[in-house]
Amino acid sequence: MVVATQVNPIRMEKIREVDIPVIDLSCSRSKVAKLIVKACEEYGFFKVINHGVSHHITKEMEDESFEFFDKPLPEKELVGSANPFGYGSKNIGLSGDTGELEYLLLPTNQNAIAQTSKFSYAWASLTKTHKGYHLSKALSIKNFNNNSQCRLTLWVTMCVVSSYVKSVRELACEILELIAEGLGVPHSLFSHFVRHFDSDSLLRLNHYPPVTHSFHHGNIGFGEHSDPQIITLLRSNDAPGLQISLRNGLWLPVSPDPHAFCVNIGDILQAMTNGRFVSVRHRAMANLLPNQSRLSMVFFGAPPPEATIACPPQLLKRNKPIYKTFTWSEYKSHTYAHRLGETRLDHFKIT
Image 1: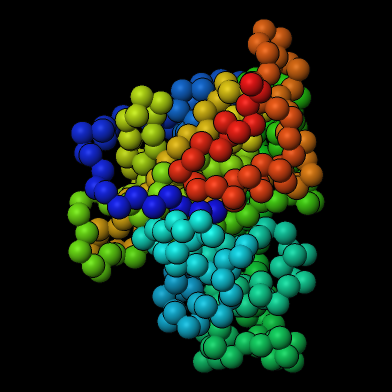
Image 2: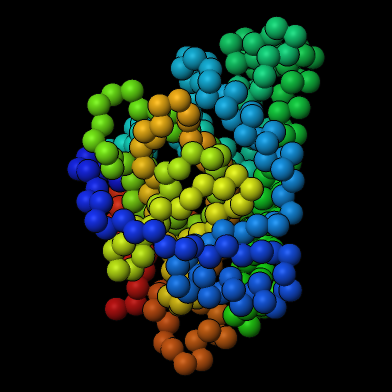
């Protein structure tokens, strides 16, 4: 993922406080489905509470993430550059985009991780010191294979991350199935993409440390963009920064809530609903808090590469299709070839 560079301060008159939908998943299923569909149509964004993801799981994942980002830069760089998975800082992607953050990109396919040495570094660098042995400094493939402490500590950390991914993936699929119910389409129409063995979903950990250089109020930490995937679930700590954009150009600050998940619709779901849902544009402000970092843990639910993206016939009874049929691989290639600030889905409109 790339970030659109923005150097000019934001005009504050375009920012307004608005109540963003907060949906209680413990309510009746039919009521929740209707509320989610309404939020997807009006905002492309909502929060969910009583979501069933254990606080213990999210807290462990947050602790491991901070443990990684607190390491010296040379240790973090052991995981390799984010191409496509690994560690990155400020300079993001291949299009010259930048942001005021550092990040770690991880695949959610366990087999891909196990078969690639760079991913073994990534998982190991998330771990805490085990009996004084610093894995991120000493780990090599040879050491990893021959050292039981390395294997044990890596296994523990993989369990933490895997538990988090499993829980959040299940939540994403539950929300997608509620959306399907609310739209009157087959139950697993959207969720089967994310459940698929070859799903291209990923986990992104974004760390926004306090800025240490001169900044004008209103500068960007992560530039304006929409997410190309189907659905995004974001959990952050209690530091503010996230904003979403409405169609009228207003920017809405999203108040942080460590007990809720923020959910936003991606480009693929906008295409599959024939434009009925909004792939919301959003951004993160640079962190101006003097003594606190902002951390966001973002799960991007995506289809397998060769999955065909098309609007189902149930949603085309009264309307002509807006978008061409394409594969996720085609759309992903188009996405990564352009700056994130561009409206990339327009390229797939039927003219």
